[in-house]
Image 1 (spheres, rainbow, N blue to C red):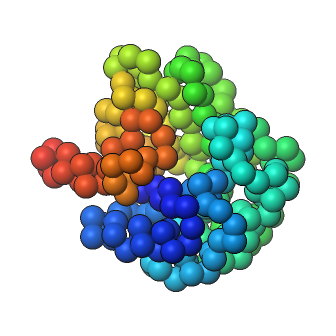
Image 2 (image 1 turned 90 degrees about the vertical axis):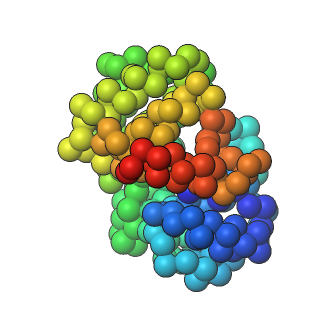
Image 3 (image 1 turned 90 degrees about the horizontal axis):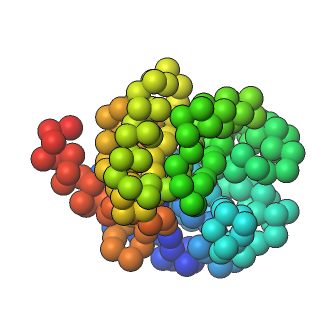
Length: 219
């Protein structure tokens, strides 16, 4: 479950609202939030595992913090009791950043995004191996599905790597089914939005819709 609130109050309200749908964990998208952010108040809002994510501007053209400030707020999230931080695989000196987070007892998601297309199978494996070398507890590899058949690439990749904690699917409307089925093919988890208009990426379903789909499927 991804929260794209603009401030602390909105984040807490969103958390309280989505708890009714029974999320397994919650990602806080810090790059949507204006400073100051009260991370302790957000941590106190739920006992569910929390992921702190702050995408850089070169990832989604929205990051409102410098690289130094972005990494600093992720470390602050570690100190506030968040369970995971999401660190992009292209982060400068990433091994040092990962080590600092782990020293605080926090799990690390090392992530890769392709906003144009779906990497080929060999490329997916190369990215995963790099993220593991960088110290990932969970590898996240997300591309863009330009056609429904791209979903099969992510699902096959997950199925071949069930022994590794891995998140992989395609963004975009053509990739929605890869989001739905990824946990059934070995994905560690998938992402949903708190509601319509609150998506953190294209093709993301609402948590209520995702829960209904799983109910119909009997999972």
